[in-house]
Image 1 (tube, rainbow, N blue to C red):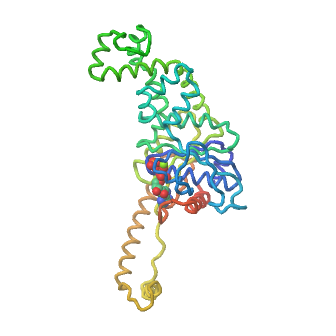
Image 2 (cartoon, rainbow, N blue to C red):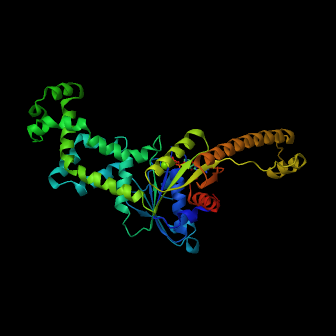
Image 3 (tube, rainbow, N blue to C red):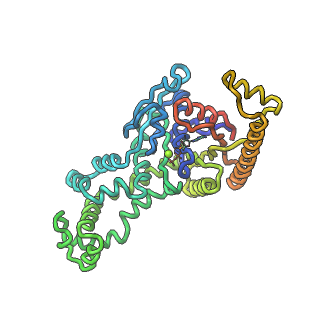
Length: 381
Ligand SMILES: Nc1ncnc2c1ncn2[C@@H]1O[C@H](COP(=O)(O)OP(=O)(O)OP(=O)(O)O)[C@@H](O)[C@H]1O
Ligand SMILES: [Mg+2]
């Protein structure tokens, strides 16, 4: 089975995996492949390092979809569709959601609130939550018939699925209700809330956190309360989208242990939650080297690679170094093959698994992406 067969009919492809395994590269390559094949693709990336923007010939990606120049990928008949890309910018996404869903009276209170500033820029899980909100917003945009969603560089891949619930639970936690009780009783005037709250416990807490911080938190939560149901509802609908038949997860991993275990755990959670696992993509696999050139051919090869009249390294030492390198690559290749076999056994029969080789350099230009995509889509699972 080839990846194009697996992914051909999908409208949402999510690339998830541990930090640094190649999620952003895979998202862009999958997007470029299907755009070349004629589809209208939007790659939604979360790449603070901006490697994707650079590889698409842009200095930066804006947080609204930007059309990528087809000529970057050869254009003409070799690129029949459209490739769009956008970068998820957490702060502006939160602002858009608040502007869209908050009541006019609450909007400014929330946007100015200092706890909101923290939530929208730094609270763990915020980015994952917003990635899913964005998916909810974009899925009906008829400019695109495929959305490829890159996922944030979390240290733990599973955070991506858990984060939205964590944010929602945080806002609906017993402690929050407890904290708000005295504020509610005092009525929220927005001013001097803490003195009005008049609770011994709250005043005690304020000594540790600072009254301002506590007031800001309470004000935020009171203003946010009215939007809470909307957040829960959208989160429920996003999950329904993620369970749909036109969505697919690609789980990216390196052949190494930690990433591999996380990918397997991620697949189990997808299965438990009824979300469609597509395939494992094992990236940066070292394959066995070809045979080194015969020793007697080396002096000629060295001579040819040097400017005339210069003397090169001693063929004997080159031959020794080549042999040592080849041995190292062989042992790495054996280790990777073993790890992939284990992954395949643990994943069970029928779990598609694509092995992408490690390239001789980073994937950081459109031709590199095209090469990555060509290799990936030629692989059999
Ligand atoms: N098969 C490959 N061969 C060589 N280099 C690769 C390969 N795949 C990815 N890379 C390089 O590895 C680096 C990390 O890839 P990428 O940014 O896609 O990972 P990521 O999972 O998105 O990372 P993060 O978790 O930080 O978002 C990049 O420099 C990329 O060009
Ligand atoms: Mg990335």
